Image 1 (cartoon, helix red, strand yellow):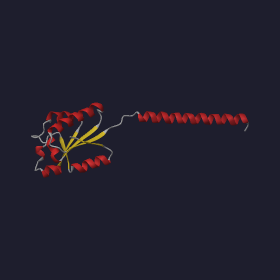
Image 2 (cartoon, helix red, strand yellow; image 1 turned 60 degrees about the vertical axis):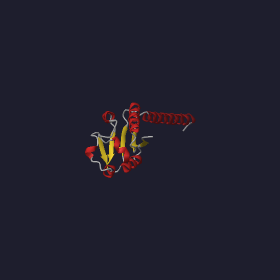
Image 3 (tube, rainbow, N blue to C red; image 1 turned 180 degrees about the vertical axis):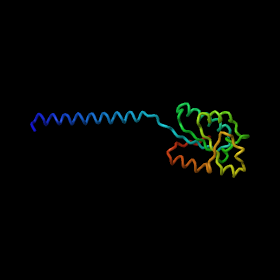
Image 4 (tube, rainbow, N blue to C red; image 1 turned 135 degrees about the vertical axis):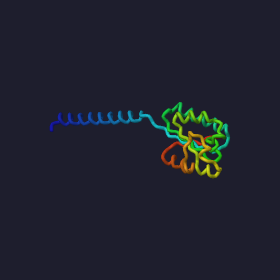
Length: 150
């Protein structure tokens, strides 16, 4: 192979390497622009009704910023009162948040401990067998954890 051909082949290989690197970088940049789905689990354990108001403000704030976020609220221990029909001070807010996609869960273990029936819980709520276990599982799946209250 003559000297000219040797340099020509080298230049072609170099140009191909630059093109591959540029294409790879463009794909990486495009992929990093994709929308991230935020997944957040909130835990509430207090009977403090001012914490319930603060929680609803926090949930709305998160959803205003990330409308597609997956958000769950797990109520257990004395925080179960957030979801008890005759104890909650934010029923309209919970209903509106449910319509925005927030999932509320009452801890069945807490219901047993406090002699509450599922009929005592607001219609917007689902149930988990054990609140703490559900929260730990969510964290193990990569969900962000927020302790609600003060």
